[in-house]
Image (cartoon, rainbow, N blue to C red):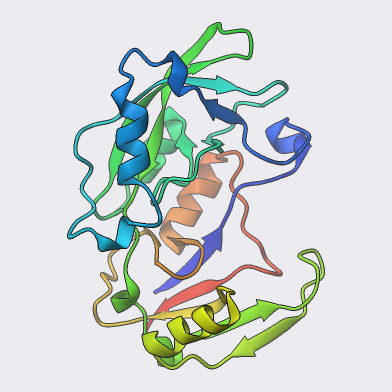
Length: 236
């Protein structure tokens, strides 16, 4: 089984915004339920995420006011301005239908109400996608290949690293204050090989060849497969 890494675009011609950042801002101050912000900040906080016994959300969150930034284009994958563990993007209805036909493992959809920059209602057909990260136990460190870019993102010069186990990986991160990237990730026998989408505690988002074919056939917008700098994952 082969998996391909993917990301979203930073190109203005794709996402509309000129700074290459998020297309949507979550406006918690416009929510009727003012407890949602605090609950989400606590639950998705990267500093405490891995300390919890499970990653099941306390309730179905609802993003009552998500506002498109000026010039932002409506793409099937919408990038938003918060960093929530396991929530990489908002998905359009048709993107959700494509993803939902595949095996995602435990996952959740949180309703989103989308508004334009002037406050006019645009759509209720987007959802925040939450798929909990897989832990270190899903990775065969000894057979995986890690790397650091010693140059610019557009013209990377890779330094490849031998990190044979979780302890070596964590020691490298703690001593260098850098998180290695992934060239190729080999999954351990703790990994569920039927998954079509996942993200580990290490590395980028991955989708199976089956899901990639469905995404490309549906021509979902704002999905980028990086041919030169992307990563792959394998089930041995």
